[in-house]
Image 1 (cartoon, one colour):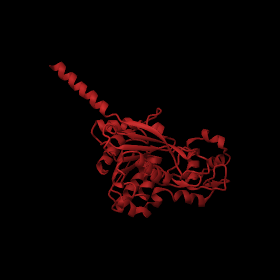
Image 2: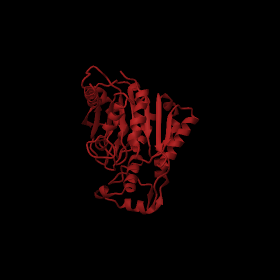
Image 3: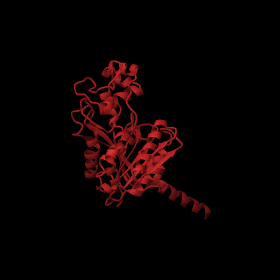
Image 4: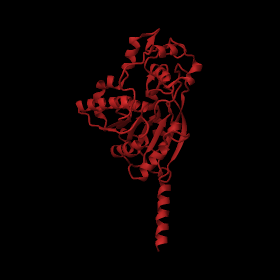
Length: 339
């Protein structure tokens, strides 16, 4: 009898584990908004779509959608386990489901890796209109081709690092599209622009062939300028750097600062108050980002904007999978409308 009971428990355990497996697919979506970008990035973009365990077996069910934005130098392929990386989002989602921390939802991640290793989810002639691609074209395509609950109350937006910045940027601009947002270790929220003379002088002499070998700070400087200081008259990269000939260029610095979250958030308070739920967190060892996230939290408090904020022991990467599993996914389970 004990052996039979044990076998039954094991069988149920295996069945439960199997039932928690969803499916993923990588699709190609053409974007009119990204056509004609000056750096020649393809307007056909990869997108990974995760379908929850019951999607295939319950053909009448509809699901909320969580749009996830990856960070700088990352891709949807890396995040969703199409290749080895520091995170596998499908595993994270399914652990959260298995532990009953969250409910089933469709999760969508566009590939925002471009010639400069990251789009900042911004809009410029140089890189294309990423805002429109994500908020309008991608959302419309997913609603038209998958069994979604196609309404603002059932759409969430989250992201890590550059994706966290994109979450705040798009969330506060488009509260009619998303009802809940969650930023994990959001970058680029404050500070100025890099004017280091040695770095800028090197970048001024860069050729397109040198892009792939650029250091993190070199490519990040180019990506920031491409997103926020485009210049259609300045090939080959069609951007303005924040310094020239060793001297800071205040007009370019101003453009970059004008896109920092903490520089512009005051203009979007009415929109932020329209969101049903806002969440954000950052690890204490993620120094500048932790401090900027706390400033945003304090600003929301000052404006009496309800939100969830947490500062925790961790750096920029080491607990992100855990935070998504135990914090972000339960957050959307609580705040999105389900079928």
